[in-house]
Image (cartoon, rainbow, N blue to C red; front, top):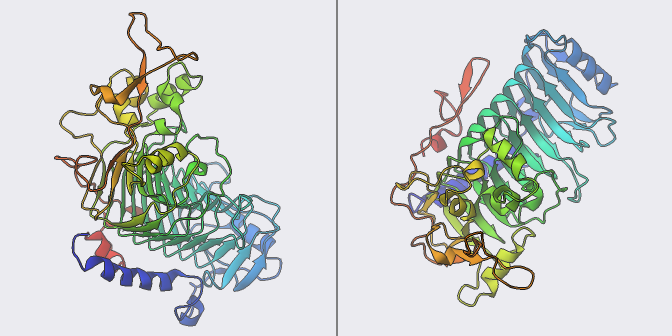
Length: 516
C-alpha cells in the first residue's frame, strides 16, 4: 500500500460499509429512517402481488415509480418490464421499481413458474432499489438492452446450502450501457453474484458479495470501475474476463481498486459452462483473476487469506489449447472470433500497490492441478506463488507464428507488458517463459513410441515447456522498467446525471477512493 497506515484505516472504512449494506444488524434500517415516495407513486397491493406487479409493469409510463409493499411475498412468475413493448424503438424512460428496503421488501421466487425474478429489457434510465429477490430459478435481477441502470440497495439471495441448483446470476445487466451498482448484497449465485457483461461505462461500488462462485465479475466490458466492495467467502473474489462470445463485445479499461478481497475459499459449485474458461474452472481460494482482458489496473486492494492464489493473470490458451493449435477442431472458430475483436492474450495488466498476504495454504482446483502439483512437489519450490502469470499466450505470441489468434508479438519497448510492483512481501510465479529464443522454453514433441517428431526440413517439432518459475521475492517476474500508463476513470450517466470517479459527482461516500 502507499502508506503504512492505509490498511488499518481502510479496514475501518470497509467495516462501516458492511454495516451499511448488510441485510440486518449494525443499527437502523430503511424503514427506521422512514421511506418516502413521490406523489402519484404506484403502490402495489400485498394481495395478488404477482398479477398487480405484472399489470403495473405493462402499463407503466415514463417517470412512473412502482412500489412493492413491505413484507416477504411469494411471487409465482417472472416480473418482466419491457420498455419498448410496442417495438417502435422509443423506450419508456425514468422508471423506478422499489420497495421499503432490501431487508423489508423480499420477493420470493422459490415456487415461480418463470426463470428470472425481475427481468428488464429495452428500457432507458431505470432504477431498481430497496428490495430483495430471493430464490430465483435462473437469475435474480436481469437487465438487457438498456441504457441507464441504477441498482441501489438491493439484495439477491439463495438461502441455505450452496449448490449448482441455485440460480446463476444475482445482479445481471448484460448488453447494457451506463450502469451503476451500489450498496447492494449478493449471496449464493451458482455463477456470479454481481455480473456485468458485454457492457460499457460501469461503476460497481460499496457492495458485498459473499458465498457465490464468482463474487463480482466484469466480463467483455469496456470502461468499468470496481471499488469499495467486499468480496468474501466466494470461490473467486473478483473476476475480469473476456470470453469468446463472438458478438462484437470485448473488454478493456477495467480498474479494480480499494476493495477488500478476503477468504474466497468456497469450493466451486458452478455448472459446467459452454466456454472452456467459464466460472466452473475458477480454482477455489482465488482472490482476483484476469483472463484475456487487456488494459486492467488492480491497485490499493486488500487481498488476503486465499487457499490457492491471491491473483492470477492468464491467457485463454491455458484454458483451451485449441486456440493455439491450428490442427485442433475449434481453431478456425476461435480465429473467426478473434477477427470479431476478441483478445486471447492479456496485455497491459498493471497490479500495483496492493496489500497482498496469506495465500497458497491449501491449493486446489481442477484446471491447475498439474501446476499445483509441479510447484508443491519440486523441492526447490515447495509452495504456490501468491501471484501467478501463465506466460503461455505471451510466449506463443512472441514467436509471430500465431498472429491469427494471438495478435502481434509483445512490443519490444515493453508497452504491452503485464506488470506488478509494490504488492507486499509476496512470491511471484510464471508457468511458461515468454522469450521464444530461450531453448529452455521449448521441449521436443514425441510420438507414441517416444521418438522425436521432425518437420519437413528434418528439424525437431517443439512445444512450450512449462517452467513453473518462482520468485519468493520479486526480481524479474512481472517486473517492468516501463509500467503501463494509469487508466482513466469510468463513469455511468443515467437520466442526465453522471456517477463514478470519472464524473463531477458530489457527496459520494466513495469520493476518497476516487482520489487514489
